[in-house]
Image 1: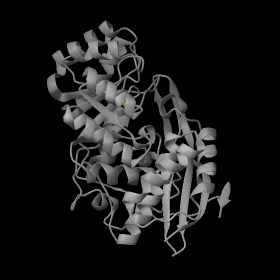
Image 2: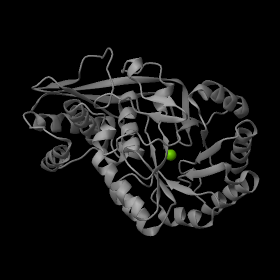
Image 3: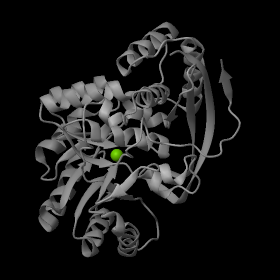
Image 4: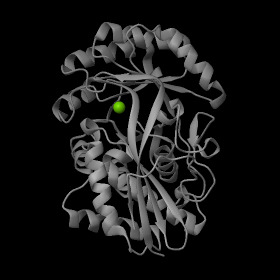
Length: 376
Ligand SMILES: [Mg+2]
């Protein structure tokens, strides 16, 4: 079986409401979709969700990589998932440049094909006979005027039928309002809360003081806090980790495999938020999990602003490997116009994202715009 055609699309995804973190607000995202076709009639899907400050590549970088890589992939033989990564690594090596989101999309497409060829979901290709489930968070973003208690009630009402047990709350970097926000969520939500500062606390002492005050009030109801300080300043991150009673998870600081190696070596965080879009796809994700598990660093599988195609890949990954303590795979839940058809959406049941029991990603595409590139 050989790759005979690759199509690359730009897809515009609109959120049902604005999503703000400490330094950015999204109302829509422009992602890239890849469809890889083989000469025996299989098609594999992948999505790239670039955001340069975190994934290291822009939409333009990802598109340039995909176009160049696609031209070299035509004619390549694809007979098992073990062959996928060496081919992609060779292509990226020949090109001399790399896009983590482009690589994640192409690897997803190739895994989707391998799964369809063998009649197995990707989590089974990764070695799991049943999906290994872990609790999934849904996020409350920052908002200037919202009543956070009402927002929490609304979220609990909308996701109660899905068994939502964990809420993730974005922090602003202003300690008093942040404390108030956390306590407001806890007023109506009895399950676990996770926090994400998105680098908003340049002063680690201020972060430690806030987190310990939160812990004094709510104890272990607050399970973890992501990325308190500016990214890749591991000295500050480690200081918070060593002194906060709430465990820390590195996200922006854990973008690449090299970043993750440094965090593991320095024990700079208690866990990492692993995103396939940051690290560059499934194979590198597997290596990240291996590194973390050897040092007892916990792993959450999270997402960028991803649609259903990429969330299906993240869910198959998270449920196909050991050592995943929780997931944060939620951006597809708040989209107005995803490109996948509704009944091929990743399930959200009993509080976990659950892959469909279908070959490959399990995703079926609906109407698409015209491709930007068709390479054959
Ligand atoms: Mg984060």
